[in-house]
Amino acid sequence: MDSVDRKILNRLQRNARVSIKSLANECYISSPTVSLRVHHMEKQGIIKEYYTLIDYKKAGYHIKAYISLKIEPKDKSNFYTYIKKMPNVLECDCVSGDFSMLIKVIFESTELLDGFINALQRFGKTSTQIVFSTPVAVRGIELK
Image (cartoon, rainbow, N blue to C red):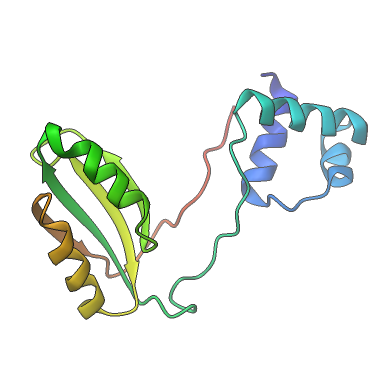
């Protein structure tokens, strides 16, 4: 990956809908060259997917929370199958520390969050933090 690839990636992280022509102009290369570079980065798995980032509150999901889950290693396989099917789960990371999973979720209400936590507790002990504000939202990293 060279400086042109990094410039393309940085721009795509800010706006994945930027046109190939705009990328070509910004990188001072031809549109077909940009297309080839993007395709190559997709094939290599550097670019994993494209998605639309929505404002969850405006869509009716007013509760964002992080749930820490302490799970036994023998239960991970069943847990992974379960958690992948949960539509309100934005992310689930296996982490170090007292808890083994960190789960980012959104819900329309605290009642629905409570129901989810109750169902989740069949896998182990939980600890939940409800988000009050988000001073730094989801963003990419500036590649240099």
